[in-house]
Length: 135
Image (tube, rainbow, N blue to C red; front, top):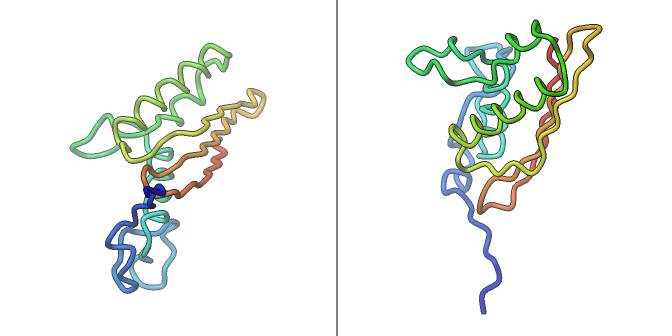
């Protein structure tokens, strides 16, 4: 009888194997390492939101472009367009992430954009939430 087995990435079962680089970069050495897929994907998503599109060398379309958006006129149409852009970029660069909810709000008086993303990692049962306040 099938019961909906949860897929565990093989690298997560090896306790000493690093998966990615942890944020923020404030380790006493060079970098802190992440050891689970959940932490690695969370850090990759945060990196995506903090990157403008022409910043990534050899990948100029990577990034949420939030810094460029802050200095535009903030309207409901612009917020909806930004939401659609972010959803399409996330689907392109993170195919193993299912977006459960993406909320983008703003405070135009202080040029602030709030992005809240709730997501699931496909076939793992892992869910997480990221809230970024960008100003």
